[in-house]
Length: 80
Length: 480
Image (tube, rainbow over all chains, first blue to last red; front, side, top):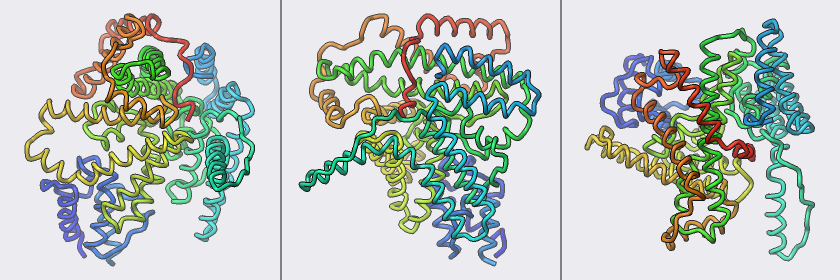
């Protein structure tokens, strides 16, 4: 799957989980850029990503995520 | 040796002087020696415990790093976690568990008493234990390579500014600094001294003075009116903030003077508008440790249950936080309360946010004020179970009295006491309010004019000397 398609699907997940229709994702965005992205909503977002893309993450992979870009790379690696 | 002792006033400048006189390559070694001297000065024998945990952590992290087989790596991690936790369990929880088991067996008609232990809790053990565990888990998770230089690991676990009460540091932040250049930075040193000065104000003027009034009220709760008890309940969070927040600033500041950065521990907590925001501002180093090593793995394992998985993970995390604070039912109840507050917020979060957004409430001053006050009330209420009162029975007695017998004279010790307390709190809140809402426009202690700066330093020192309580005993978090 191309990264633009992943970004598009991820944007709709983020808007839904973080309850903010104005979110526009790019690779550099981190938790600090989205007000409601905290440790509580983070795992809800991860679960939603797993369900939508039908993939499973490992905890070690989650811990290494630095920004949206690394999340997109991880999803890509799981889909190929 | 504690930060408010006369010994520290001699020790710290002496350490700084020798530290900067020494060639750069000897500075980490000297800091290690100074740190062990600092610790031995309190209870010599417990330095062996710290050294033991250091050796075990060093050896097992090297083993974890060298081992390829996942099962073996996990085994080494588990062995090290057990070795690291054993002293904490022995000194902190043995009597609690022993009494619990004894009472349980007795209720079943079996009498099997085990001897009670009357050792003092080794000061700082809860803090360096968590730092050692965090480092081991980081090596296991491949977030950091195991450090081969034993001195670096030993200095990390014993670094004197943070040894007794944190902030609970991470190897990922400290190792590069200890292994890098430890050079004098005028800017950092000045900032460090400013933080220390403000830390002493928070501890000596705010915390120690409130402590006299609050402990007097809680110690004689049966003789005091409900109104007086409510006042003590409201004052206690500020006392803890002045105490641990002040300690943290002195710790961070003294490390800054040596050119070392330490993670912040507080971020104006009483301006939080919800409990979840409060816990992102209060005792940050402990909460981020619990988030990374307890909450995240738990919520990850339970993620298929969605919001309920998060609720269970939250409850367990704060239960562990309560147990970390102390071996008593009051602390456990405190943990359950915090978990419940946060769970309710997590469940209602989406609806609340929509409502706030729809009515543009987050821009309205009255809404922000009420939210801050309500958050403060919730925390103040929960703190009844976290320190000032040592039994569930007495804690509920205090709550009952507040609701059923509020009237009667308000106990304030003496007029000067209440005036000094109000002055200290007002100054603290004024500075924090300016920093919270006027970022960049308020340069407290960092004014561009050196005349203003010098006057402010002098004024603060005079306030500390005149109003500060110097025989206020230890810091609250030394008992944890």
